[in-house]
Image (cartoon, rainbow, N blue to C red; front, side, top):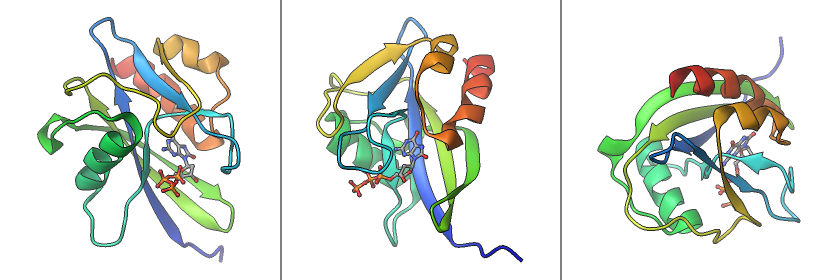
Length: 135
Ligand SMILES: Nc1nc2c([nH]c(=O)n2[C@H]2C[C@H](O)[C@@H](COP(=O)(O)OP(=O)(O)OP(=O)(O)O)O2)c(=O)[nH]1
């Protein structure tokens, strides 16, 4: 049987008033450098997924939101190196502050249909159509 070591990551589709989604470009030196991803990151030990996402949004983008503004949307399940990634994707339409690229190389607002043309991590590809149907 294939071994299963879960690796829990939370990410968010921030949606603006025009229905566009924020994606960020992973910086050089990190695994999957230069790919476009949803903001987010690893859930630390002892942390809830929602608390992890609120923390990551502050750290990565300098924006503040509340757990009640994070709506569960979908998830990805995919092998990643010697582990297995479980990525919980939330949707958020309400936050304070202007997102700035504190960790990422760049940010861009895109319509879900434009995401098919972006280089994204393999685990994210099934999420695009779901997001497109959802928002
Ligand atoms: N944030 C994010 N991570 C993703 C996405 N798709 C995907 O496969 N991943 C993977 C890449 C990484 O292996 C993992 C997230 O870990 P990370 O290292 O970027 O997260 P982090 O912000 O906690 O990182 P760190 O710099 O603190 O180590 O999830 C996505 O859309 N968003």
